[in-house]
Image (cartoon, rainbow, N blue to C red):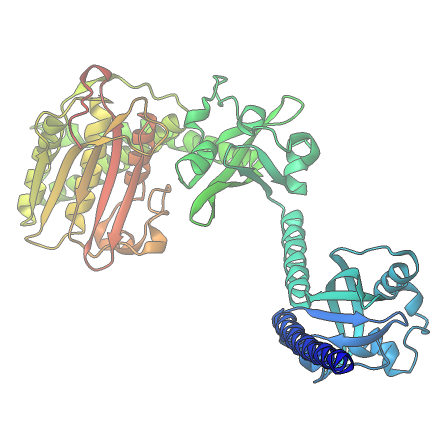
Length: 551
């Protein structure tokens, strides 16, 4: 009995061990499945990474490569690379010649050096830029990578993981941008005009060689400094030039473009030169990032203009006395009963009288324009009601308008503050603009003249926050866009104004421009060919009568 019991216990023990072994095998099987599933998940993750990842064994041969994106084509269709060297995986030019690792360029290859350093010394590389020449589909190609390494242990064996991010397209873009910037700098450096770029705080970013030569400053000396206090601090009359009125300042603070030819720029040695410059804002992502100023030295041009002006004025001034004598003699002849000519002779003398008077007025206009240009025409400023000035100017031209079957309408806002102006000069400006509007309007047309307050005008020359905006509008044939900037030049006539039937010598608008600017205002024209033109000018509002409740 005892023996049978021992045998039974032995069988029970064996059965328990068998069951235990079975459970252990099941556990191992499940664990193996979990490891396999986890491995497949990790492989799937690595395969989706848009970066070339290569695993090297201790002999520097590839044992696995991820198949993410475009790198699958480059590295082959499978993950296993038994015996494949790194150069063969990347299709390096040396590997194609059977020299992978032993070619002349392999000794200076950053990837080869990194693999050697990692395997022999355990050193690591992180996001280093490297280049390779490879055999691509189109032949020889240069590839650029961001290269990193990591040493890992797999089943007790050392493995080296290489990560290569292809940045070839980015490098091509950067190279193209760099070449474009170099080309742009070459153009700017070769320009004969001075060019300066400032940031949104008015500090110098760039100066081309011409600017450095004209101003006597180097870019290194001015870079980061405010421009206005260095080269634009003083006006032509010697007074300080407030930065708030500087067109360069207004380009990057108020987005205003301007062209100026009557100011000075100052050199490093304290001397100045007459300059013509343009200032325009620079934009980045829709916001002002600074301004560009282009300028040239017009000292010689100014001297030539002054010589020409002196010659013209001398001739014109010498013409004034004989013209006055002719006009007076003809008037005396026509008005003296004893000397009164016959009708036919009177008609001839009338022609002489009108021609002499027209020439005398032209002489006066030339001299007045010259005096205003030189700042020698004194202004008798006083507070004037703009509505009354419009009515007065229109009334003087009513006979001309009636004769041609045209109408002049005036309109001024109620309660307008007075303007500070010279009454006679302002009447002449209004008269010139209205005469032009009547000339170029068809029969039965209405010419409109109006005045309103302009709050916070963008112009820099006004002394005060407000200005008077005056406009004269006609319904004539209009002015071509490319002629709008020329019509205020002396002796220039464009479009209809150049037709002989309209007469004129091209001085009226020049006079208007000089007179308005002498008051601290600005004049310009807007036009649509075939539909008419509108001339605008601005004048300062009387300080005592400024209003801020009108828009």
